Length: 102
Image (cartoon, rainbow, N blue to C red):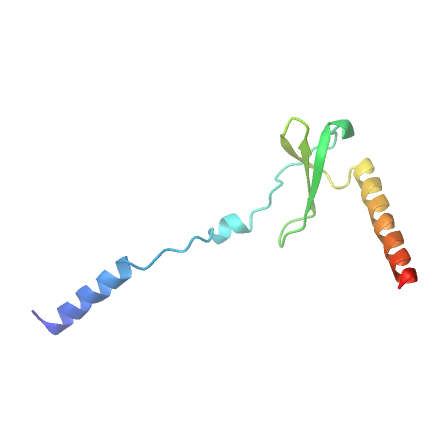
């Protein structure tokens, strides 16, 4: 058998046994979670809030409802803006207290 043919067969054998990557394709990684948002979600029905800030996507708010359904909430919703403002103020106050103690 020709040496070049042997080398080609060896290269093909190695190439077919290279492990594939478990990474997601770039098109799936860069996709935004929230494609549409809701403006009206009763606060009583929310069990948990998640805040996502990913590259190439706007700020996203995902609410897990008591029914275990997940929905995207419009970050411009008035009650959500107030909630975020209160949370930021609470963090600032706790930092000031921690700095006074130290």
